[in-house]
Amino acid sequence: MAVTARTHIKALAVLIPITAALLFPLFWIISISLKGDTEQFVSPPTLIPAEIVFSNYRRLLTETEFPRYIANSLFVAFMTVVVALGAGCPAAYVMARFRLLARPEFTSLVLLAYMFPPILLGIPLFVLFTKAGLSDSYLGLILAHATFALPFVMWMMRDFFLAVPIEIEEAAFIDGCGRLRLLWSVVLPIARPGLVAAGIFSFILSWSDYIYGLILMKSETRKTISVGLSLFIDSTTIEPGLMMAGAVLITVPALVCFMFVQRYLVQGLAMGAVK
Amino acid sequence: MDHGRGWNDQIGSRRSWLGRYSLETRERLFALACFLPSVALIIGLILYPFFYTIVLSLQRRQLFAREGMFIGLDNYVALLSGGTFWRSLFNGIVFSGGSLLLQVLLGLGLALLLNQQFVGRNFFRGALLFPYIIPSIVSIVAIRWMLNDLYGIVNYWLQALGLIDQAIPWLGNPNLAMASLIAINAWMFYPFVMLCILARLQSIPEELYEAARIDGAGGVAQFWYVTLPQLRGTLAVVIIVRTLWMFNKFDTVWLTTQGGPFGTTQTLPVLAYIEAFNLYELGRGAAVGILMSIALLVVFMVYQRVFLRIKEWQ
Image (cartoon, each protein chain N blue to C red):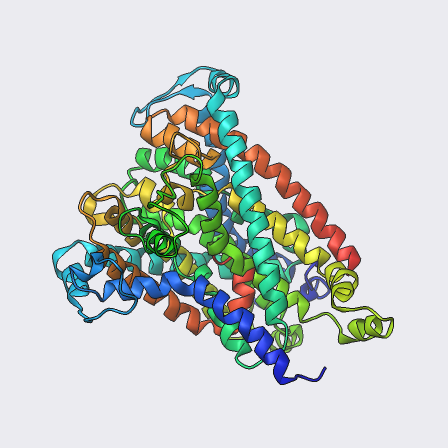
C-alpha cells in the first residue's frame, strides 16, 4: 500500500495527543521531583519547573530511610534472580529435552504456578515463615519472590532451550561430551541471551513487588522500595517533591533493565513479565 | 502440545564405558538432578502453602497465635451468609469487567493505529509501553497526586475549563471511586493488550486484505471480515489472562482506595488481606483465598480449553 503524506498526518494527529495524555503522569512525576518546596503547591501548577532544584533528591538520599529501602530491594531482587535462574534453568532444560518431563501436564503445572495469586500465597507463607523463623528476613522475602520468578524462568527458558538446534548437542554428545558439560559449555552459551533476558525480567518482577514486601517485612530497616514509597502517600505531612523523587529513583533501574532486554521485550511482556 | 525432542531415548540402550550405570540410568539421574530443585521449591513454596491455606481456612486463628482451633466450615458459612463476601465478589466482577473492557478497547485501538505505516512509528510503539513497564507503585503515586482534591492537576484543569465548579475527590467519593479505579487500571495495563494484538496484526497476510478490497470491502468491512476473525484467538487468550490478573489484583486497589470509601471498591483480594492482616482473622482470610482460587481454577480451565481450540484453528 502506498503511504501518502495524508496517512502520516492522520496517524500522527490521532497518536500524538493520545500518547501525550497517556504519558503525562510520567512527565508530571519528573516535573514535581525537580520543583522547590513552594512551587510544588502553587496554583496554577507550573508544567515545567520555573526553577529546577535537586533538593528533593538530596533530602531523600540523606534525610530519609530511602537509601536503605533501595539497598534492600536491590539485594532481594539480585538473590531472587540467582535462585530463579539457578533452579529454573536446569529444570527448563530437561523439560525441553526429556520426553517424560516435556508432557503437557508439567508445562501447564508451571503455568498454573505462575498464575497463582500472591494474595492467596501471602497468608500461608506468612504463617509458615513465622513458624520457621523466616518472617521479616531477607531469605523469606527472596523465597516468596521465587514463587513468581521461578515459574516464569522455567516457562521462558524452556522456549529458549527448544530453539537450540538439537544437532549441536548430538554432535557434542557423540564426541563424548557428558550431559553436565554439554549443558554448561554448549547449551548455556547458545541460550545466553535468553538467560540474560529471563534474569532481567525476574529482577524487574522482584523489584516491582509490593504485596510480599508488605506482608512479610515488618521492621523499618528491612522494608523494600514499594512499601517504603507507599509510606510517603499515607504520611500525615505530604511532601510531593520527596515522593516523586522516590518514584523516579524506583523507575530508573526498571527502565535500564528493560533497555537491556529490548530484543525480548515483546516476548517477555506478552508472557506476563509484569502482571 | 510439544513433546520435546528426546534424542536420548533412541540411544538410551547404549552402554557407557564410563561408570557402572547404563547410559539410560545416568540420563535419568541427570534429569532428576536438574528437575528436583525446582520441583522442591514449587512444592514447598506454592503447593504445600496452598494446601496449608485449606487447613487454615478450617480454623479460627488469630494472626500471631501459634495454634488455631478447628471449627469446620464455620468460616465459609460466615462468609457465604454475610453480605461482605458477595459484595466483594460483585465489586471484583465490576472492577475486572470494567478494566478489561476499557483496556481491550484502548489496546485494540492503539494496536490498529500502530500497525499502519507512518513516520515515528517505532517511537510510539516504545513510548506507549511506558505505563506498563514502570513499577505499579510509581503509577499509583503519580495518579493519586494528580487526582488529589486540593493540589491535583486534574481538578485544576477541569475547574479552569469550567467543567466542574469545585474539586472532586475522585477516589473518595463512593459513586466515583470504582469508576476512577477502573480508569486507572485500564491506563496501567492497556499496553499488554496492545502488545499482544499488535504482534498478531503483523502476522496477518496482506493478501487477505487485497482479496477483500478486490471484493469491494471498505475499511470497516475489512476490519470486520478480515482483521477481527484473525484476532479471535489472540483476543480470547488476552481476555482470559487479563481477567485472571484483574480479578486477583491487590496492589493497585489497596494502594489507591484500600477498598473504600465505605467498601465500594473492596474486591476479594482486598477482603482476604483485611480479614487476615487488619482484623487478625487469619482463618477467615484463608477461606476468602480458597473461595477465590476456586473461581480462579474455573477460569484457568476455560483458558486451557480455549488454548487448545486456538491450536486447532491455526
